[in-house]
Image (cartoon, rainbow, N blue to C red; front, side):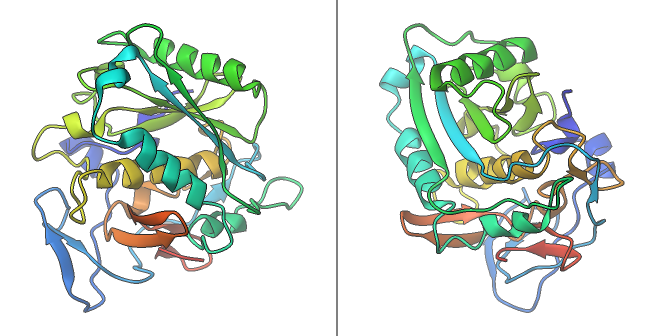
Length: 286
């Protein structure tokens, strides 16, 4: 099922009413000031607690051994010079490694057998430049799901509950109506595989919630927003029957503020906290 509320949202009154918890400063110096934040600032904190509700388990699958596959959709990527494939490849080659305590926040969210997500190495499973022809300018939700299925077939992971396909749209495209449809990205389930609709964040209009340059890096939104969807795909891969709060939000939704730099073996990346039931709040590490 398609759940816009479980994705990174743009500022609309109806969406703010169900969602974004205000940042809580712990007295540390604030980072980059921005009107994109609910409080007008991105506040640099450690284990920053925010108002919200603990997740509840709906009985569905959890990704015990998550593997991420990046699909760069369309020949438009052939001429892109912003370094996004290399940036996200480095991110996912760092997530899951022994020094990654951010992903391990998800390990508390167990499945029906009592097993939680485990990490023994980089979670990146592969990168596919699907660039034989152009991505449509305005692909609908069905076309994005189909591209997710194409990616799953390419990597031979169709039906694998641990697989995440990230469909990365190219510059100038408007996947599922983005950026006017109330999200920065979302994850969903095609019936075959968990997939993420990841628009070209640098195309977000000025003043949107999509956190470009959140901590001073040109590609900050790609790691913050995709990290959000990665964590939610681990804990709720079928988009609605995994770990979801009573208010309908997932572990990333309640923590869309207080962005921080997370250091991995492959580099330093802007990331957001994610919800911990153990802490009853938003944390940046396990």
